[in-house]
Image (cartoon, rainbow, N blue to C red):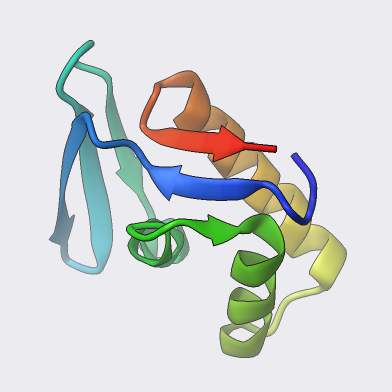
Length: 91
């Protein structure tokens, strides 16, 4: 995944917000994922396709975090979501 990779929520899922967090269910395979408030913010942003770079820049404006730490955490989360087929990442 690089700065220009496009990230979007899968069409085969449903999600809801619960107390500032997000719960996501893959409708095809039953995979369930729970997101903390920062993860829920990322989830909300990728309801329409965005590049990894756009996501990073938006989050850097909202949160006081080191860019390298944010990128690493974003990659971990997006890789997990992609493995569960909850997001689609295109290079």
